[in-house]
Image (cartoon, rainbow, N blue to C red):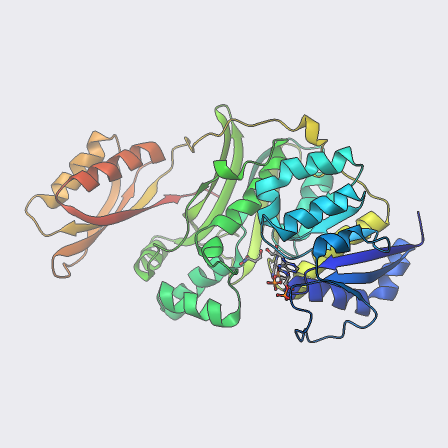
Length: 428
Ligand code: NAP
Ligand code: HSE
């Protein structure tokens, strides 16, 4: 092991500049903890002339991040550009081809190509580390791959997109609607370059698919995550959920069942007094359940320069210390292909629909639910607004399949307008 570990940093945005800052401000502390000097040698970004708010003096510049990965004076490549194709993937593959270890914060890349990259890295004797990719500053990858390695994991769940939690909790606190809060997130710079990754639940689904792979020893299967975003949630839904003692969260749940691997990321009602229910703003929370340990709750900042760079540097420090783990906690060749399973465990659901003002309309809705075996626990109709009235229904325990059949039948009836909103009431 050479004394110095020389880094190449591909991407000088929020995360890349955060990493440079830690390297500059904590050089002595990191050296005393690893016994090695860790220095940035070369960097790459799209625009060389951009003011990045800190000097890049003494750092070699590469226009092409894959060329940065191949440089002789770079031992370890940090990929913090983003995107699951193009530059990010090419750079990671170039690093592996050159026999170099990789640290990345890129959940999209791992969700789409994690298994192939893990195989390539392990064949080449390299490691890929990605603590920052899931839940920002929370050391959840380390918890699963190391701290809980002796457990059979039974369930992983959590709130893993800070933007969505910010929007949902601010809607409740301020009484503003979804669109106003979306615009606020845009102004605050919270949104991903493609905002649908956040509000469409995709970013959080990327993260859940990575956690599932480690937890259950399976190949990352992002396409199998049942994903639904928060765009249909209204202030009315949040208030009604509150009246019933619940809060709405974009909640990810992954569990291995007798039918296969269940992975879902969707807005759910959770008890307001539960740790997940009390989560405010951009904070993330991951709950892990293991057969020996019981339940672990990890909470912290899921994004931002400091928290994300902290996680990137934790990976760099592990590599500097000589800690070398397989990408998903066990050799990639031993990861199983999981059979995807739809959520079959019954749960109560919150259902909101717009009922047309016609005689017998409410009775028709109740009959459709009954025909699909969905039993009503509570039901309330509000006043008509021109031609339609909101109806809120809480069902007894039912399956999503039965509820979807009822929703499809609503669509073919002449009494429901628009698409109903159905939210699972999750026991957490
Ligand atoms: P960002 O602020 O948009 O920065 C991206 C950087 O990558 C920019 O410096 C950009 O160059 C550079 N870049 C993009 N495409 C490139 C290309 N083809 N060649 C060379 N450089 C290129 O993004 P970020 O927020 O730092 O996020 C980086 C990664 O970390 C993403 O995968 C993201 O999902 C992940 N992440 C971010 C956070 C967070 O809080 N921001 C948290 C967890 C994970 P220019 O500056 O010249 O345009
Ligand atoms: N857009 C992500 C979020 C950034 O809001 O949580 C961190 O991954």
